[in-house]
Length: 102
Image (cartoon, rainbow, N blue to C red):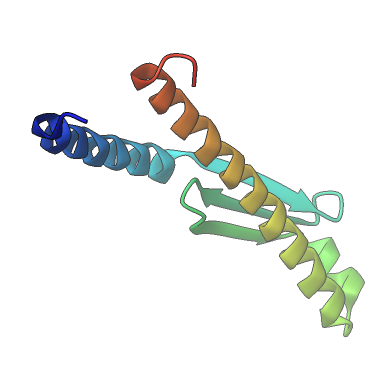
């Protein structure tokens, strides 16, 4: 292995990670549960940006708040899966440019 290029490779990897973080921070993903009763938006870094609960859903659950909690959890988990896919796609796209055939 040519260690003289190691510093360049590490610098390129750090630049790539920073670019990926910037892309993911600006990627907005949405998911819902309960047929749209609960809707969430997150970014590609899995940071929750918004949570919207339809008024009719809040009324429908009444005092059974656990049902509403389950809908929120389901929506957040669905959005998290979308964020995972966005992270994988972004990483593969960036690595594919550096490593043909990846």
